[in-house]
Image (tube, rainbow, N blue to C red; front, side):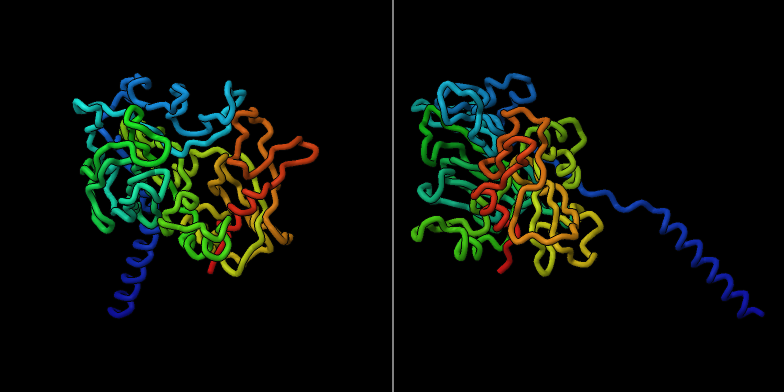
Length: 349
């Protein structure tokens, strides 16, 4: 009898514990608290003319994120994409050299440092990886006069990592600034893709491994900076949720989910444990950032455009030359640059 009572007691205790455990909500996703990378805080003082450095056009918008630059003068539309923001210096020496320190925008680890200014339009630049739970996001700091950290160094938010400069092609002392990006990595296998399929000419070289600019998808850092400033920094799923859908593409399914899918598993409807489908319908932002993967039952032999948001204005329909809007009757068209981009997304060695 005592044994039976003890067994019943353990059973009840187990049921009670299970009920409590099932009632618990999952742990919240860690937020990405990101601070301004220089002492220039005129963004928050609502004085953008003192925060952004424009291009030689003099238009303030050209220092902001997005399709803010033009290939024609005067511009009918702004069709050239700017992947980050250009932050103006606050201090210069008597010779006009910028003196502003550059800080890590968040805790992280330095994963790439370039000290040869001739190997990129970015000149001297630094990339930091920020790991938030199982998700990674990156910040990039470019045109530095000098880098003060090496790859592998763990840094804290606000720790100095460089001095502002004007290294890289097309920038002079007068237009010295920090080019700052917040980005996602498209494919960790980028180096093998570049060597086997990505070169446009035989002499092309990849000096930056998987941190080549082709493989970094820069998002607008301003909403993240403002959210942190307001005391409500965004989690990685929230960052994706705040991006707007622009078009959809159908992609051939390979033997297992794409590298990007595996790293951001919450983007796949039905989860990654489902049987591999015939193809994937992928919802993308204006710059091609994947926002949602949906299993499809029919096969495609190569990537093809499936949908476009025709409610967008012509200005807001730019896609870095990847998808042509066309008219609704003809439907959108995936261009050569789009085929190349989605080939990289699907690539596995």
